[in-house]
Amino acid sequence: MTVGSQVQGMLVSLQSIEATLTSLALKSNEQEAREAFHQGALKTRTVIQEILKRKGKIESEEPQYQQT
Image (cartoon, rainbow, N blue to C red; front, side):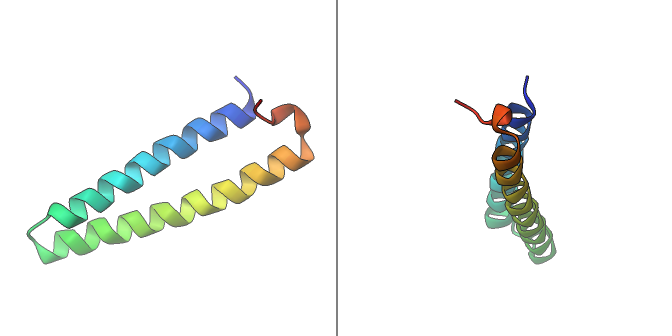
């Protein structure tokens, strides 16, 4: 498994986590829980964006990691 495919797998997992947190925030009846889930989703989104930047850098610097 290449670094590129590992990073892509991690991104898919993080996107799933973000979606789950967002769903929980929408479904929760308790304000404090809603806010906690929402904040978790926002932080996860920030991590996703940073990893996407890093993935682009990896692929531009190391062409062998590009997925075909």
